[in-house]
Length: 210
Image 1: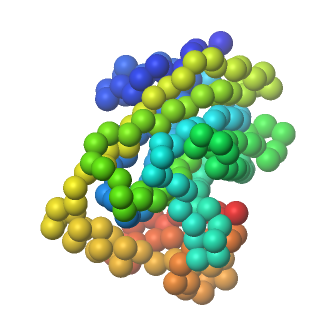
Image 2 (image 1 turned 60 degrees about the vertical axis):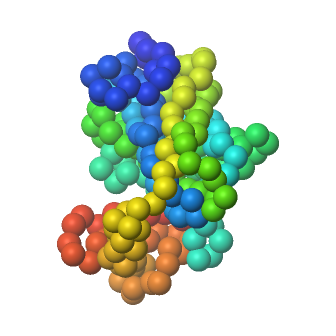
Image 3 (image 1 turned 180 degrees about the horizontal axis):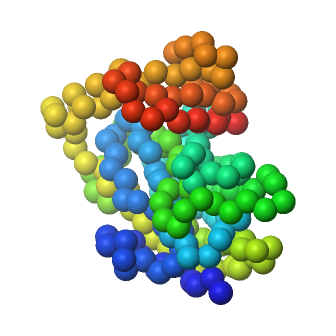
C-alpha cells in the first residue's frame, strides 16, 4: 500500500517515507530563472502522478521564445510518460499530471526527479525563504489510485547574488546549446521537443514545451 505524503522536506533522503512526492530546496536570485525539481521516492511501481502545487507571490512559470511555459520530464525516469502542467489558477495554484501513454509503464527507478519546472523570480522579491505547497497528491500503482490528504511544504531560498554567482549564472547561460529534433540549432526553447546539451559535453536531455 502507498504511504502518506511527507509532511516537511527532510534533508536526509533516508528520512523521506516511501512513495512520497517532494521538492528539492531551490535557490533563486531576484529577476532570474531557476529550476524547481519534483521528486518521487517509491518502493512500489508508480505508473502515474497527479498533484496541485502552489507558488508564492512573485514566482511564475517561465516562458519560452514562443510564449509557452517551460517544464520537462526527467528522461532518466521516463517510460513513455507525458507531462501536463496547467495554471496559474487562483491563489498561485498549478496542476501537474504525469501519465503513462501505454498499457503499463511504471516510472523508472525508485528515487529521483520525475519532472522539473523552470520558474522566474520577480526582480522586487525580498531575500528570504518562500513556501511551496504540494496538495491533492495522487499516485497510481497497478491500476489503483491512492489519494494523499494533507499538505507538503517545500521552500525556495531567495539569496542576494554575489559576484561569483552572477558569473556562474552568466557562464551557465552561455554554455548550453538548444537543438530541434531536426538537428538544427535554436536560439531558445520552442514549442514541441527540444534537445538541450552543454557545449562542454555532458548528457543531452529532451525538453518538451507545450
